[in-house]
Image 1: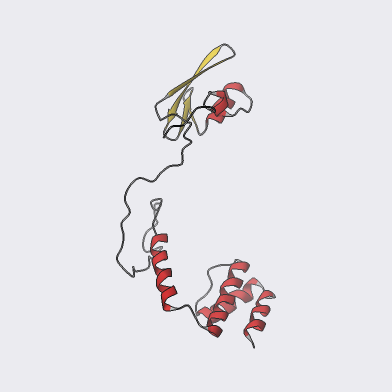
Image 2: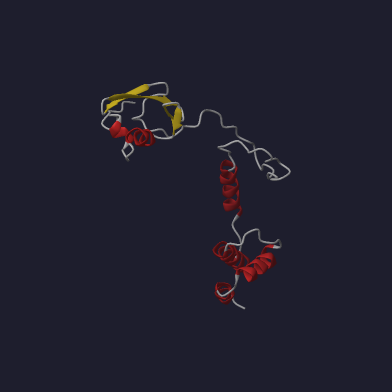
Length: 171
């Protein structure tokens, strides 16, 4: 059967049939039940077997990229250890990345510890900026809009409510 006919027949296969075909061409069971992913992987493998695999130069570049992709941004959760998720052995020298991750923070929001005040309907409301939210009336809110909603009972843009929307940012 030609390569084109084999790939065309993949389009009519069920997920179970694609998983079986995956096991045939890769020599191991598929760990996915996603039809599109199985189709693409099996079709790629059929093409690679018919016309040749990646060049050694392409494989080396893929290894380099894979090493950088393995960097963790978050620490592992409890119970996440090497026995549950074995790590591949490094191919070349390991690189250590150190430093702080930049947290995406709206530059219009003042630094943590800043106290924001707003007079609204004859009352003064105070909010403290926290590293990961805003404290108002003993409660922590994720956004200034949530604080404004708690104060007014209606939806407000928090930046507008606290007068930060037009604030110039200098960096």
